[in-house]
Image (cartoon, rainbow, N blue to C red; front, side):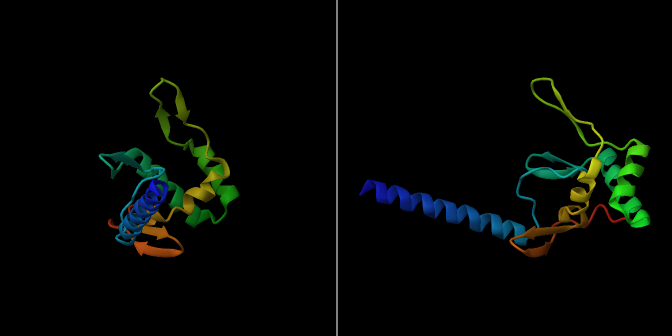
Length: 134
């Protein structure tokens, strides 16, 4: 009998968490996960990192000019634009490598253009797009 109540409790908690995430996404709020390039997570809020943001703007701008991921990859590598450098708590360094074809993934991140995607729906973000290639 107690096992049934425990299972029911887990299901209710899971449903509430999913509903809260869905409501936050519909409001255009970032609710966690990997922090997109150009941002840093401070107190669970995304804050723009100016030097990374400029990298993202350059990548978007150059993609619109070039129109090819392969050519963009070569161009970005020629310019010396690399992934975000992170120093881990143990002192090891992660990132700071050439983008490679991961640029295609970066260009698909809807959050960077002021949108939030959730379960096939797209919502306006809580903040205006920071990385319009203007």
